[in-house]
Length: 220
Image 1: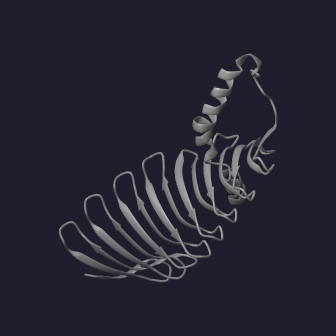
Image 2 (image 1 turned 45 degrees about the vertical axis):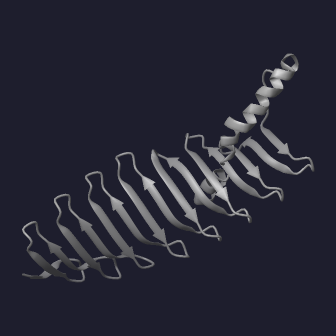
Image 3 (image 1 turned 90 degrees about the vertical axis):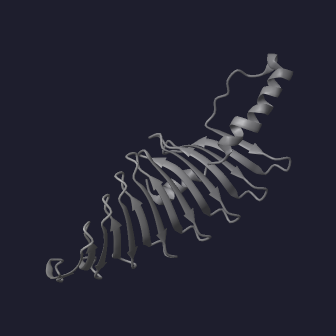
């Protein structure tokens, strides 16, 4: 699924909360008043909700790709919240700005829980995710959407910080489970050129690498 497609069905989101709350309350009230004439089941490919002026404020349908989606619109007809579930069972929630561009996405894909924050131009700027094995991560992007910084904590508790230019990681920092810190400096091609490490006994070491990423000098 492409980002646009994912955002597309994520576009359909918050309304689910209303379905379980305020909306269901009105449905039950109507049945209490006229239960004898209430239909037991309605079947359709699309449901539209309009306000007193005839403007669409809600839509519930299934897309050609099998995504069941629910969208909620403001008074100008702009999509502001949506809930969607793909045919593979992946759910997603989306919040949209006044211009209809996505600003927040919450989803679950292949058992990975994620939150994505977008700028006003719909470019992803920050992500937060947790994998099934407990690995968690935070990513920050530049205005073009390129990953520039990330923090990852492995299931064993090992934290790693990565800083990148527009193409490759350039600085890496980590801490092993037994408390040994390390710093790596990478070249424009993403290969390590220098590293500083501190052993468990407190001894430090500086290692220099050649263009191929092989160590060729070390102090001590």
